[in-house]
Length: 113
Length: 115
Image 1 (cartoon, each protein chain N blue to C red):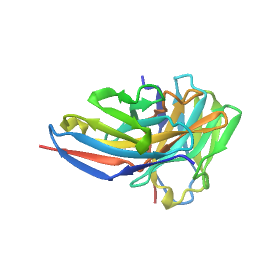
Image 2: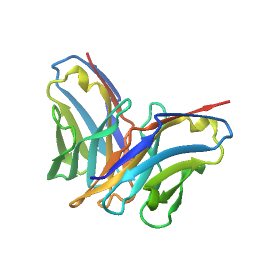
Image 3: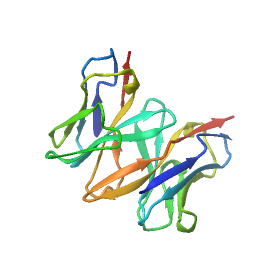
Image 4: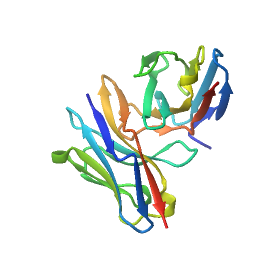
């Protein structure tokens, strides 16, 4: 089984709708991250979490919110989706040092019409 | 602030030829550096990492990278390209912010391997 799972894998929605993307991990890591990937821009950090009680904004948090329901679960919400939020979204985890790198889920492809 | 620059958004090589993907970093402190690979419709997979030990780092699938402080570079190489190496490659640097460790990614290099 995959260490980091994301649901759904694909989602098409309409402008103004609320969307939740979910991430679960079995690696036992405290740190979790949400990124979006756009062609030519690489990965950009949306939010990250040290542990269940600690949530931090990344470089592009506007229009997004997150919830860390448990050590293993980290959800990303778009309260009112807009077309420029169409992207590939990745969840990742790491140990406290980050020295072993981050472990990524398979991604969620979101299209906002 | 730490950052990485990947030179060349697209690189094309022939099967069997040398692969060279370039990455330069900017960091005010000794960096941790990473190369990730993304195959079509998949997430990112760690290829290799530099964490201040040996400057020549070997990774999976025959890839290696050399940390050169004087050139602020961490280029990825493979002696002989295979068709299966076609993918997008990302260089990343670890940023330490308090007790957190975040990664800053380059914009990626798409590798095409031709017959």
